[in-house]
Image 1 (cartoon, rainbow, N blue to C red):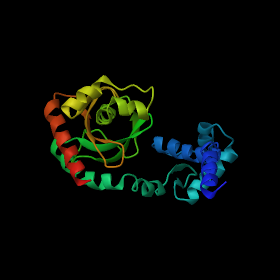
Image 2 (image 1 turned 90 degrees about the vertical axis):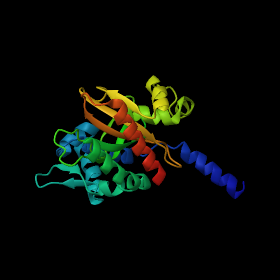
Image 3 (image 1 turned 135 degrees about the vertical axis):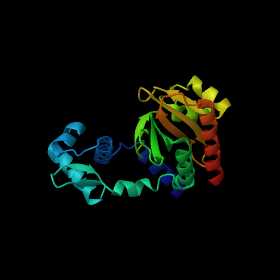
Length: 244
């Protein structure tokens, strides 16, 4: 067996190896802490993981050593600042290109503007900007997630992929009829899908070498001119694309 054959054999063996349970649990701890607004005790974390408290403690202590988890004065744990450092590296060029455009859009339409990306069965907010003096606006935190099959961002991303490509990426997952409509209009609209009484408008951003993202605004449902808003969101998405 030559060196290339040996390497190929090793790679095939590694590809079939089971995932690390400890690493999986550590990642799950971060996901759990990111979903809560306050702190969690070791007992809470252990219960959420379904493991003994001693196991949960070892995982949390390791994450704490890396700044990914922070312990407060009362002994509770919350997500740590190290996670923000990691997040800055996700789609760095997209975040840099989008931020000034999101800022201008949010100020102009007086709505929260954000970039969402596809993460398996979810849309995850990558970066968000609230309008100045944004009383009454919907807050969209970076890292927040909602079901991919609900809301305008998921529709917009599907519209950029097309049905055939979507089937390759997510076999058996629904390609929404609204994505076909969005492909023709250049933007997608949703109402009451993620939160009752809340609407969103989104347009796809085609990112070189990556899957499409979505640029979106979110607002309390009202009598906004959705078509005009959609065209404005689409124009902003094209401006971001031009910077990538």
